[in-house]
Image (cartoon, rainbow, N blue to C red; front, side, top):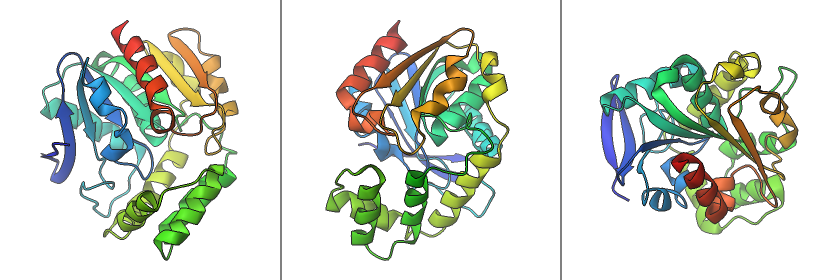
Length: 262
């Protein structure tokens, strides 16, 4: 993959920009990176200009000691797209990335052409203190070995994790500032104003995707989106957990491509 780098408010950010056509911006989830979209970028780039970024605090982007709030990330996305001279994009956001994408769509409606949210955070009730799967995921940052990472990740949804993936995750959290950014981003999402009462302010046509076997953010938390008055198509994916784009890429790519081309 041809990585590029861009300075955004004194932060060095890694991103990719491939394909041509209508621009589509991909925002990964907590602990993710551009590699979260490994199974999607090439396919989507056949029909679209695809831009994906390592959010500040993740991947190979800078990880300064700051508060990684949703407000910060919303401002970052707007500034990043401005530097790429993009006046309007479709945004695809996963989990934390879905929370960020929704805030961008609410606060900058003319910037967002279409919106795809994948098991988004942000509309969870204040009473939600983290699912058992999420708590296991958070424990990964303190793992003492790749083998421990593998055991923790495999226990989240009872699916095996490869040695190479566990090694990659382990190395990622050894990077200076990575653990702090992870925890700050998690807290920033939990403390941010809830999306629930503002979802109807989203003007862009919206697609919500949720794995029926999502243990990280269970599908019951899709209820606020079900109650939306307009603009929201909802698809629940069978035999799929928290990351449909990674677990069921062929189905995901077709659903998202069809929606974005409509």
